[in-house]
Image 1: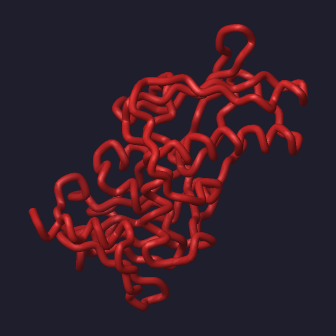
Image 2 (image 1 turned 90 degrees about the vertical axis):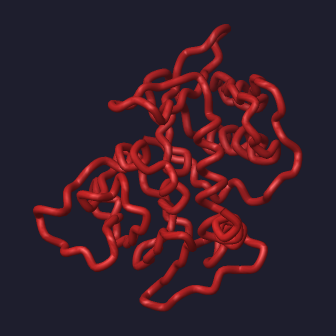
Length: 240
């Protein structure tokens, strides 16, 4: 699986994609690689994120990467599928975030939205270099009540093999085999989409998900930067 790391999205944009559109790369053919086309709907995705994504694809091709139908490409935590398009172009399809097993759709909307949220969440308390993206095909350990609990503790150990390192439990819950089970990170995302934004926190991080989100690293609570993504998230929660 080839990867594009989310740090390529380095800036927050203000221009939005306001209508369904198809975007095409323009610098791949010169290297003997078909150009990419990606579909963006009317979701509020910053235009700068779209352009950085296209430029990152072109950069990978310029550096020697080659793509063909049937491959998967990891973008942030998401696994995109390379599909043959019209006129010799390549399209990128993403999981629809609804079906299990994964069903792919002709879009990258969810991928870019989630990538932005994950990046902004981490950078609310840590440097951008701290971003540690898992893959949606990796596993996580979850408490039996993870689907309905209003308060969860997310702890991340060091990823190993196909284990993302994420452990999701209720505060004070016993870590016994009867109350914990292992599922795919994608399954966790379908059941608790509100947790996706925290998946890119690095190992040795603890995220308290409650009315207010708190983050600790190496057992030290981290201050949330004023005006940051998590700061706004907590402010919105207080007004509900």
